[in-house]
Image (cartoon, rainbow, N blue to C red; front, side, top):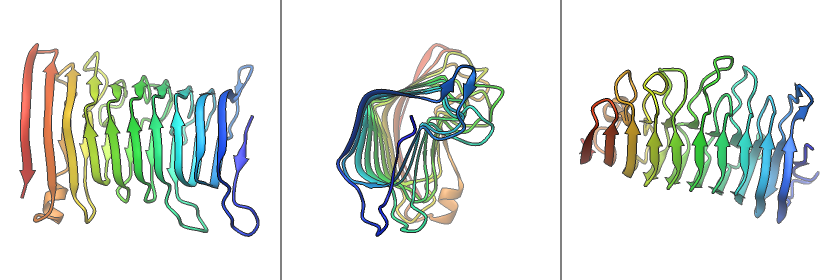
Length: 273
């Protein structure tokens, strides 16, 4: 099943579309579809996805352009992006001709697992995105496919909130962070990061904050990591300070448990320059 909603011929957006309690699969025996499972283009507001299982596709589970005031709740995303093209399970993007950013979207209580390239990609100005109460496990771990950050937030995005998620770090490429955050106004609060071995994973969070509203809060997260070999909680790109030395503000407070030393480390502070 490959539903597609889009603008009508005069550019009027659809609204109040609901999809629930269904499985969308790209599997046909051993063959996987090379189409997106769900393409949403200009669907407007109140696009509601509830209890949908997206499974087995070479491309994306959801490709949304110009989507706003919508929610993705209690859905499962498994075995998506099974190709060497960079396909996260969810891509929130901007409509080419209308140029409206995807915004005001909630992704809550979902389960992401074994998605080959990554789980969520926000790009082209996506903003006001809330990622809350989800579980992320085992993505960007397949040696046969490209490895990107499990959550990729491009530099021109803004107002991204990630709260109360469980992040289990298995990305195989030792140079790739679990979360790449280039947005302004990001809140990463009360999440749990776990790695079972220092043979996979890199930084849990790499933040860049390269725009004009430089405020990033990384507060109250717990990192239980197999320390050493490059598996660490946080990497702040030094270019943030060089380009905007007067307004770059990053608030950091977290608990770091390193299994290599079995010591609890606490880091509370405010970085300003």
